Amino acid sequence: MLVLLAGIFVVHIATVIMLFVSTIANVWMVGSSSAGTISRGLWLLCNKTCTQLPVSSEDEASLKAVQAFMILSIIFSVVALVLFIIQLFSLEKGKRFYMTGAVMLVCWMCILIAVSIYTARFAGTVYTTNPHHGYCFILAWICFCFSFVIGILYLVLRKK
Image (cartoon, rainbow, N blue to C red; front, side, top):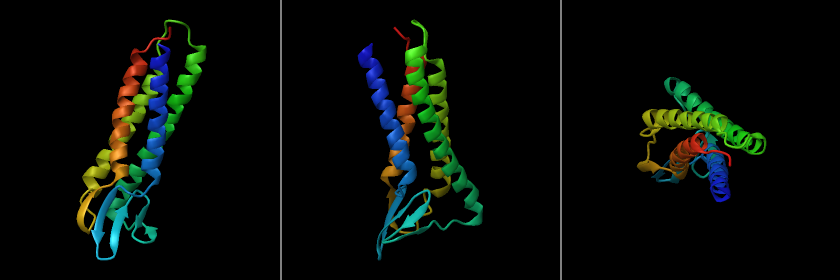
């Protein structure tokens, strides 16, 4: 049981770190142009130097929603981690980690909404040759999978 708890804890910490990286770094879409590699994130457009992300007025609300949901997913993931630690020491024997699981599933839903909006609105808007998804986009989907699995495990897990 201790090994299972330690494993879940390590995967949860890895998920929090990957959420931070995927939200902060500016490599959601990557392409090449005559000036070199161009990467686009949630905050900046980077070529050799990074500049403010140019967004049309019709896409601005979508970008703000993606930014907000990614930040919310980080917050909920950290809250779930703190709740797990608190419940680990205060929960009675035989009880389940319902609160931690519920908060982690809310984190999962925030990631799903953010990445879905980004995929629908911004995946094809990089005007470069050979555009493809960057590592931050892939990390966000990995965090999506991890947060779902962790959330379900917290709901099923009993304190022994």
